[in-house]
Amino acid sequence: MMKLLKFFILAFLSACTIQKKQEITPPIIPSSVHEPKVKVVMPDNIIGAVEPFYVLPLKSAFLARIDTGATTSSIDVQNLTRFERDGKRWVSFDVVNAASKEKHHFEKPVLKKVKITRSENEEHRIKVMLDIKFAGKKMTKEFTLAERSDFKYQGLIGRNILTGNFIVDTSLSNTLK
Figure 1 (tube, rainbow, N blue to C red):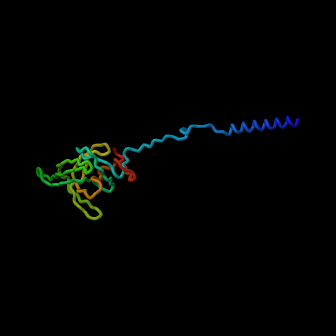
Figure 2: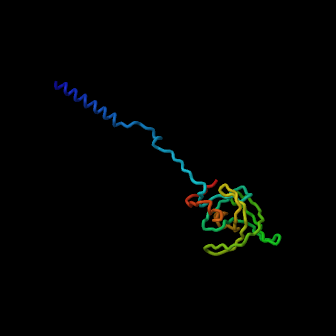
């Protein structure tokens, strides 16, 4: 009788152990179920510290420093010449893309002469209207003409283009295509 009792106790314990093991073992779930696929979508109006823009009709892009402290945008020009046409002040100048060497000659009426104050000094520049393409949009905006050969970027995009249109994140660059 004792042997029979031991047999039933061992059989019972074995059955409990097997049942416990089955309850404890978690089901195998593919890892893709636990890893959600997140797509980060950036708003179209967030731009970085340096972005490309086009001076129309040129086909190659210029890199510009985005400057929220500058009132007016600026472009590097060569061979700046002042002249008079029909009693009004005009300028002629060349815009040369340093990267592609593409060049275009412009003649534009002078809007006005502006004083630019920089940390070291102040200078006077001529302001004209230029057709540009920035962030996929064609626009006509004011630009001051400067010899920016000492600067790293041939263009500077200021508040006259940025205000109400773009948010600048200086940790980014070249967000525009």
